[in-house]
Length: 379
Image 1: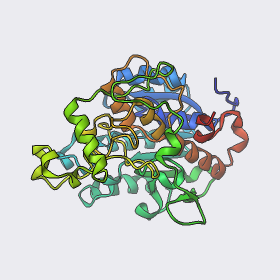
Image 2: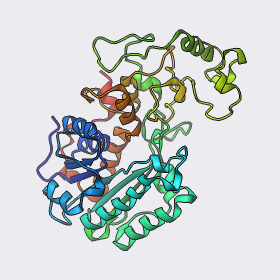
Image 3: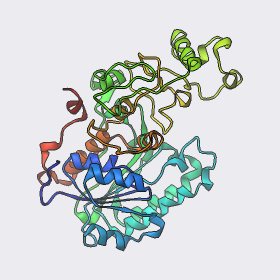
Image 4: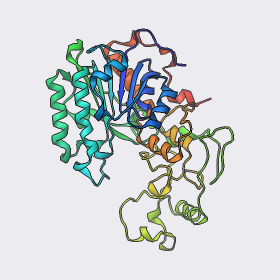
């Protein structure tokens, strides 16, 4: 049980999903007063792991005043609002693009921000939101925040586009994370989150790797299970797929290097998606985990050492979820989507600490549970 101080900064988490962002803030000592999401199973998982109130509802049918009432917070007394609207609409691989109805949730998010008037807003999305075709929508969001006295750097790409690997996350996951502070809170613009890790620069710690994250997990073959960990079980592959994985490893770790006789027919005349059936590098961060990480055909998701796809536990480690996080009885497909859609928990804990330092909230946090992901998994 994570202990909180009575005056811990209070938080509402919109589009909370299973609670990855909430967990990061809670680990840092914040009080998660309410989560809101449309997915009933995700809400069940959130309640179990975050131990906070949840509202299972389509945000389009939910008002900001109801939100404050459910969180039992007075208007303009909210310390921090987490806003992670579904990002698939802005993804570069989304064919619907500008017409995706999920993109309108940014406008709904703005409605909540302007009514709730939190001291700090943490808005997260994919880098695709910075694309030229979404410029008008993002510009409106930005201008409305500024009109309502929110302060943040104007250089969106330089100061708000973060690579998780630069902060000690074992994954090269890029995300747009805007941290805005309300001028009426008496604070100035929150400074840029300085990177702490680098691939080559000796002035920083080295990037964390796949090996760092999963080295102490039990070695498994295709179809094998770890009797001591219900989430560490290897997917079962057909002989044909296992043979191809062996050959991919033999020919350098990428399917594009395979001789034609070993390539799938669908890959022989297709130049895109070169990472499919790719093998992760043991000594580098993992590539971005999408909702399809559990299937080798979806990307570079073959285990670095074993001829198989990833286990749920391995994916959780790469997303820095603690080992005691429980998905209850969700299906593997559901879990895969939840993990792929989540923000790395450790990245959010680091952001939460940065915000606390900038806002002078350190004395409101209980530091007993503010432990890095790496200390949690090294036993």
